Image 1 (cartoon, helix red, strand yellow):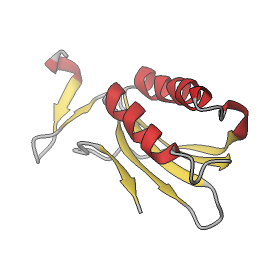
Image 2: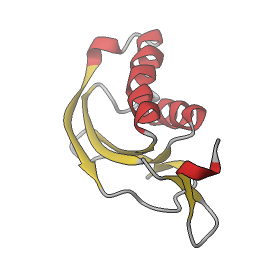
Image 3: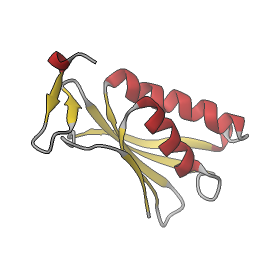
Length: 112
């Protein structure tokens, strides 16, 4: 990846200059079915960062950050992967907001 479009932050992590970060709330059948594990696997495969966690109301919240095309691909691949598990029609995105980028973030984690 070309250095001209990446910025090295104080801690040495690189954040794409054009990075976006979305906070998304998934509803439906999303807990107890491997949703968070799948989200982490898909995110790491696309080199996007952020986190995913279960919420007390049965929904799942995720923050996904990276180049816009990779963030978009995250949602497409989630549909593909969850569809393979028979969940495609079982969940939807209830809320989606663009939020501030977290500079220097290095990984995608499952939060508890």
